[in-house]
Length: 405
Ligand SMILES: Cc1cc2nc3c(=O)[nH]c(=O)nc-3n(C[C@H](O)[C@H](O)[C@H](O)COP(=O)(O)OP(=O)(O)OC[C@H]3O[C@@H](n4cnc5c(N)ncnc54)[C@H](O)[C@@H]3O)c2cc1C
Image (tube, rainbow, N blue to C red):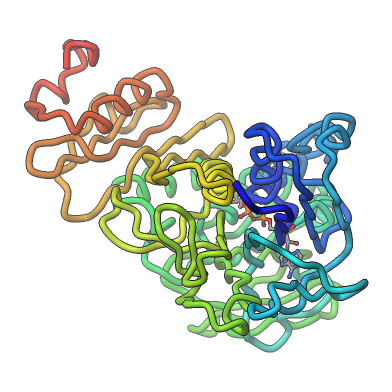
């Protein structure tokens, strides 16, 4: 390939994988990795789990050990934000230092936690969770006997709720929609999550928004809900989604729509600029629509794909979506994109600790999810990848081994 300098914006998971892949594919040119955080690339999933609970140190989240990272011979620029792209000059402008030239530019700028737009949203004690620093600040507030209010019953909110219960806190989750994780799982799984959390002593309030947060006389916070109800707490975690960091791309005139629009080769509307990870939106064949996939798996695989495209290697980024979440003693995994239009087949007892929900489209397995069912889900994954046609009754029958399909 002809590129001499490849610049990556964002030293997160996608950016880290892109940088490593350039080297592992034999690229000998210059790699500049611009990251607004002080850290080398790291993985965020433990920030709501073991790092937040104090069971693991933040260092354990490193994508690559520091010594191995140094051997990659990357010009890493920590604490530096990219501020603009000059496409005609092929330059990236930086907050500190001279602009840098690029032959190929890979945008891996991820996203930031969405904030509440209500009075009191910025009060001390109101947290969001995206970075190592956020996890340290929130972790310090998780103390036994204290009260945590979680605003948002999505994955991050529920994982923090589970971690806070483990730390002996009283926890209330307030979710504006009618069910938990409504955007990502079907009603049956939302019901399971509701039972899981209420059985662990979490107070879950559905269909209610928080209208205001205020300091109270007890030196805590009081949240006022839309229906006038008040909830007193010592700390608040706001987990209401992510805003893609696509400003650089938008201001440079690249096509964006809630993220940088890319094709399955990770190319934006400018073929010398690619994007990967939480910031990138592409047509996901498994979902049948354009979307951003906010997941560990996608950040890694799309970061790798973008690097390969930058080097002129043929790629087609269409991985079967895989997501997991750990809450209490439950490991939940989702393969594919379950939709309300799919036929659901439950294998096992859905009131037990382990079962699998399969989703069929015209008789073919297209998605599966379940708690503590890693082995069955490995088979499920193969059924989905092969788009296997199944008899729903046999699939539901636990006496028929999945290997038979
Ligand atoms: C608390 C938490 C728990 C999670 N748990 C799970 C899980 O259990 N399972 C799962 O599948 N996924 C999980 N995820 C999602 C997963 O971690 C993300 O999808 C993944 O981190 C996305 O990687 P990324 O590289 O696209 O973005 P990021 O990792 O966010 O990296 C983007 C980087 O770009 C930097 N940046 C932004 N703008 C600029 C700029 N202008 N200049 C320079 N640098 C910039 C940012 O500071 C950041 O360091 C979790 C995420 C969080 C926050």
